[in-house]
Length: 337
Image 1 (cartoon, rainbow, N blue to C red):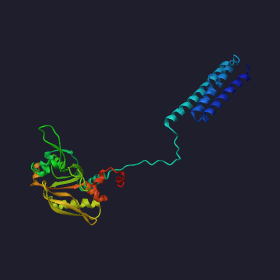
Image 2 (cartoon, one colour; image 1 turned 180 degrees about the vertical axis):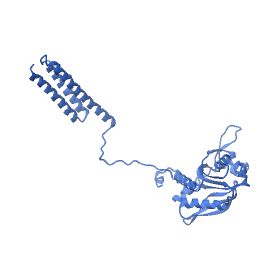
Image 3 (tube, rainbow, N blue to C red; image 1 turned 45 degrees about the horizontal axis):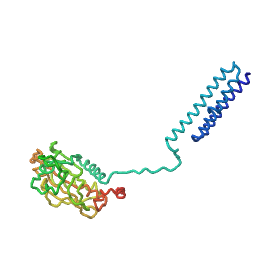
Image 4 (tube, rainbow, N blue to C red; image 1 turned 60 degrees about the vertical axis):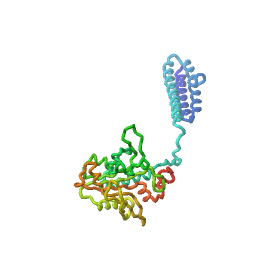
């Protein structure tokens, strides 16, 4: 075969490679890629097969060069088709293409529950007043829930109808779900020496009938300060600073005489805000018997304690009339906060 015949053979290979590249570039789906494969690499009627037959008609001296160029062209076309098939497989696994010009879909974002928001706000305010936030177990023994708080065995507060007692092994001391976060104060005083400034926040449990102002599970914030020279004036100042910081404005605090086994004297705490007085909780000076129970000397230190309902604080701040709304899981209600 003459040199011109070899040149025409090589030119045909160049056309084959150019045509295959154009066909694959234009293919948008698997059917188009398969059609290109049949056209260029088909086992019976493909263009590569036809050129391979023409290779036999070259002169003996031209066959080595022709064979080398044919193999290069065949490898290039095969690799091109394989890459196109792999690209379509990846696209199929990834799903339909994304149109970046379309408007995005808003991702719904949640936020903290209003009770959690209230707890964190209380912790932040009391932290600025020098009170450390502490926590304790919700399942308590009777020593921490009653006896260390000067609540004797015959006291009505220990009645099974007023507490959630838990079943325990025969002969073991009964446990219960804590009825107040004062239990945390006892645990901290047992482990530390005064001076002491702590605030405990968490769930407490009492078998109350659920209504607009009561719930069998609710949250309390309890503050405790123990150091020499503590008075009721310090207690009232701390409560007023807390109320003003939390509710905003000049909130007045009113004490009404009351009785709690673990404080003496004891008071009910009312707060006036927006022209209305609201009962928020109880407070008083820590009973000397409680100080003695944890190893403190009542002659050297004194202290005050207060307990406020987190739900009542949150309801006052957000204008909620029924605390049961906090636990109905109604997103229409919760998204307001």
